[in-house]
Image 1: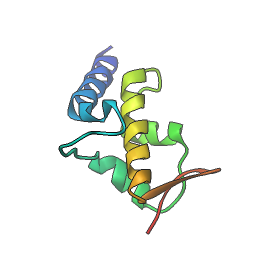
Image 2: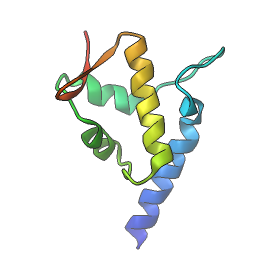
Image 3: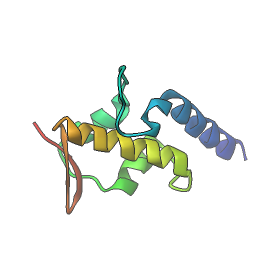
Length: 93
């Protein structure tokens, strides 16, 4: 039970920390991408969405947290930093 509560708290912290990615496009201002997400992607191999969530410690059933991760991936793609391939998301050098 303690483990479940810790996972829930981690997910809640993630959602609070990256709430600015509730929408992909932003009219003005700045946002900080999840540095752990970037490190995971920069390892070089393509990762599908579930694997990314697992490495970030996010429960796939937490739809809001999953949406925040997906929106960050789309934002990084718009900047030309990542690409979605048939094998998953890949960092572009």
